[in-house]
Image: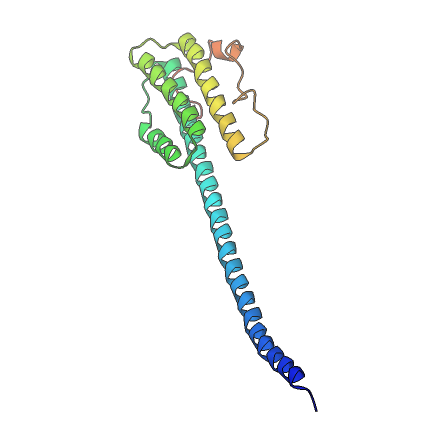
Length: 191
C-alpha cells in the first residue's frame, strides 16, 4: 500500500497538469491574436504606403503633363506672337494634388517651376518676349523642370542617378531655331 506522502504527491500533480492544459492553449490563442493584430497593422501600413506612393506618382505625372502643355503654349506664343489659351486650371489642379500627397521637397521643386511660369507669363503679357528672350527664359524654366524631375526620381526611385537634361531637343544654338523658311503661323502638327 502506498504511503500517505506518495499519494499526496500524485494528487498534487494531477491538478497542476490540468492547469497547464488550460494555460498552454490560452497562451497559444493569445499569441495567435497578437500575431493577427500585428500582421493586420503591418499590412495596413504597407497598403497606406503603397497608396501614398501611387498617389504621389500620379500627381507628379499630372504636373509633368501640364508642364509640357504650358511649355508648348509659351513656345508657340514666343515664336508667333500669338496669344494661346493656357490651361492654368489644369496646372493648378496638378499642383494642388501634389501639395496634398507629395513630400515638401517635391512641392518646393514644383513651386519653383510655377514661379518661373509666372515670370514668363508676365514677360509675354507685357509683349517683351520674342524668340531670343524666350530661349533665355526657357533655359531657366527647364533648369527648374529638371530639378523637379530629379526630385521626383529621388523620391520614387531611391538610389537612382540624377538626369543631366530633361529634354532631348537641340539647344538654342541649333540652326532649327533660326530657319527663315519655317512656318511661323501654326503649331507643330497643325501644318
